[in-house]
Length: 160
Image (cartoon, rainbow, N blue to C red; front, side):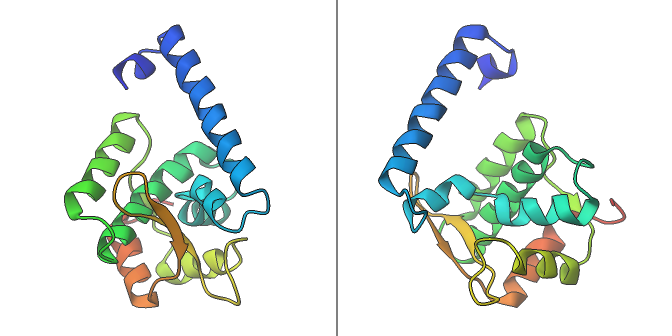
């Protein structure tokens, strides 16, 4: 990560190449986006709500998704899929890259309203890409009260 943050050309080239190879492999395994491919959307449910809630362009897509990854990791911990130290490790990595780790305070109702129209939602149920032990991810719903707890714990009051 240090080399990437220092913009080392060889490290960046390797990271981009590997990322493209992994994405191509995942897409090739799940061309219809019915399972495995969903892992490419980690952080996007919360992230898209941030983008839509603030107005597109207020935050960069990567900023919103990075913050969304922190929120999705928190949700994963609350669901018992990962332990709290793992969620904190994800948060620390996102923070180390300079991306925001606290979302804007749109209000829980607004977040939920925006996430209900996300392409991953099914029948009005919000679906999240959540993480489990290293290398495992999946998509599932979560109790409304738990989602509200995640939002409350991961926004900066008065940041809009």
